[in-house]
Length: 307
Ligand SMILES: Nc1ncnc2c1ncn2[C@@H]1O[C@H](COP(=O)(O)OP(=O)(O)OP(=O)(O)O)[C@@H](O)[C@H]1O
Ligand SMILES: [Mg+2]
Image 1 (cartoon, protein in one colour):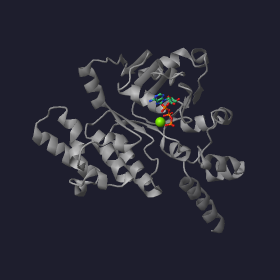
Image 2 (cartoon, rainbow, N blue to C red):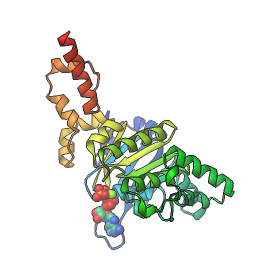
Image 3 (cartoon, rainbow, N blue to C red):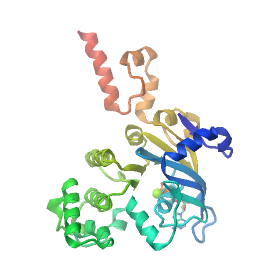
Image 4 (cartoon, rainbow, N blue to C red):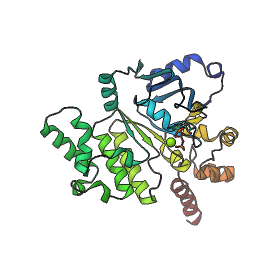
């Protein structure tokens, strides 16, 4: 199901269904407005959206539509001029103690790892957030070591951050957030500038994190990755939610996507171009999520034709 959000959103979507869905959201934005000091246009202009608990979500939208600004509001770095951010149904409170707790529950990985990595070495950087929690040193050491092991970076423990590649820096930034065991992980364009192999490894890491119980919201411009990976899609336009739903439903809304200047996933286009009889023979009840999945279906048919 996909919901297109208009100014009459409440009328468009059944109110009871809205309420039922809201109860499942780990994070909610309710009519959030934010204008940067000195800016003439709002960056968030009445943004209302929910991040469903336990899902792998992507946040899509044209450059400048407000994705990063949304993330900065999600963990309380920014405070709305108007409207509310709700964590598990409770309005975020902006005093220091609450914000510190919120930052442990909601981990934010910035688009640019240089903005995030502040310590001299990998181990020091991963331990930084824990040191703020005033935990005993042995506990911090244990958590840092286990996290470095999970992320396969024990051999870099003492490596100066500036000697790492961009892909390695991204992994260290992710490890530094995951060591705090957040319940919600926000990733701002994490695969930008990663090569194919690095992207594959990164996505595998995300899948492990999600399987261990973390809800993930990833902002990305990679439509093919979004379709292959996500189970919930949110699309923003000019500081508001424009469209949301399951990937297949969202990417079926060609007219809306065209208006938002977003393309459909390549595998989606190929699937729709196939004759209906061939699609039926492939036998998938849904659009294949990746070229690999589609190719496997076509190979099966080719093999059955030969035998
Ligand atoms: N520090 C700032 N000062 C003033 N305006 C800003 C600032 N940061 C962002 N903006 C403006 O706020 C709006 C939303 O920007 P934001 O960075 O949230 O968009 P985005 O969706 O993350 O874009 P991108 O896909 O390019 O990362 C844009 O119009 C941008 O110009
Ligand atoms: Mg951004």
